[in-house]
Length: 326
Figure (cartoon, rainbow, N blue to C red):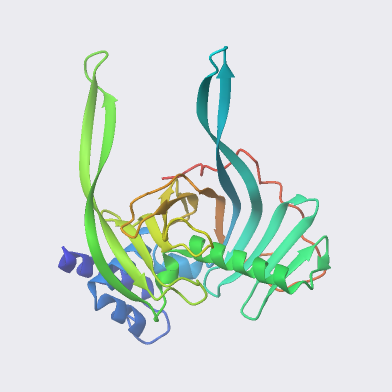
């Protein structure tokens, strides 16, 4: 299987990189990745989400972002003289972040604009610095600026996978495979009957270390669909204080395909153990939708200017599913 995978990848990457100006059909960094089974799977993940050629042709991406924070609680009802008590678990979903974001995935620049104009908040991240503007006033609060930069960096890293794997400082190793299956139910030939088709496949776990520059993580484990290389789950260290688990497990779904690039969608995060088993309740729900790729961007600067862009009108509180999601 690995040999077949290697042959297919060589063909796809050779076509993608032919004429890239380096004087080589396959640049040295790609050759290095091809030298290991882990690196081959990393390249398969990149091809499964659109490929190197499309990524380099359309480095700019704009999308709407919503982070839903889940609060766990309970409702208690006391009835009659015996004081019979009914306890009903409750999930409160709070929208605590809604933005329109623009990324330069190649140079790792980021810009975001709040959906609300009260106040209108702009954030930027470039190679030299990060900045924060509220209602056309540039913030001088160093703590606020650091938080803005950290938020954009985390968003950039989360959205940029798997293309951020094109980093020559990374090492890849295969950990394990786990069985999975797809179930399809269709109406049968006779009325009132249904036919069930079960399609088995495997999920390949790929460990990545150290993390890409600026990601702030020591390692990642990607769960790759063996059929197309796409990321289905992600295991990462949990760094927040007072955490009850050492790691996060994030499931990916409803990814959006635009111009051959498959990114965005829905990412749901749970506390997990080191083996990737969920050990707690849902923590957060992130949505990346209205994803658009382009060769350049107009009206957006990754360096602060005094001209305030128009407030976006595409953000909606009940949006969150890509129209052509997979």
